[in-house]
Image 1 (cartoon, one colour):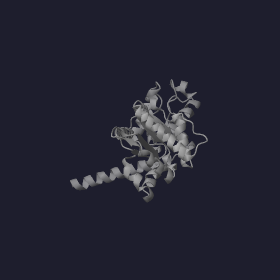
Image 2 (cartoon, helix red, strand yellow; image 1 turned 60 degrees about the vertical axis):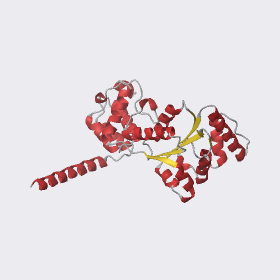
Image 3 (tube, one colour; image 1 turned 30 degrees about the vertical axis):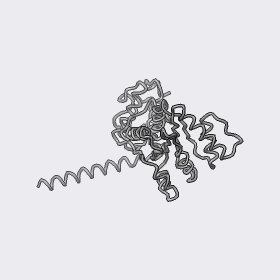
Length: 296
């Protein structure tokens, strides 16, 4: 196993959201802070969007961990409901309540009753929905109606929707205007920049007791940072595969050759690295020429 080869005490690059190894990238920290603020301001809805692999689910896990003292958490990760009854059955399952053999209206009433009871006991319900782009418009409308629940003391339920960029486009449809007007917090998650990408890999190595400079060469880190385009999922996949390849070849430190092979196996665009380098060189030459002309 490559862990022993590199002197690590745990797996540094995992395929699932792993909050203990969370890397505080600027974009992720801003997104998390804005979601926290949305909860503090008792907003009905907040929306988090971003391309696949950027870490939306990890941010949701971080938010839940920090909010669960004050909220009853309902975390929905499978949004292929098909019907409103399916949505309410999922919520009732999370609430630990019976949901079989009931009509859609009965399911809706039972969900409402449970949410109101939770609020009376001193906690709001925080409904977090991942993969929100799969929700049909009528299900989004159901969520809007659910968010109408309130008492004299304030909002009873708060909803965080996360999904691919198409979710933001869906919410702008004319038929969802009432819901769109409710959303004050809209966050688009960005990729890591090149410096953060390299630091992300180093952070994960340090988190499992390793020294980054004894695991990856600088050239290997640079290659990973360029090719993976700031997508943590790609960085995880490529870095781990490169470590496996290096260990199997009994290479002491992961070098550019191992990374190039990993990128090739994962069908990540190694060729773009050279194109980026040529572009940067051309831009640098252009800036130098402009500066020379200004000084002449």
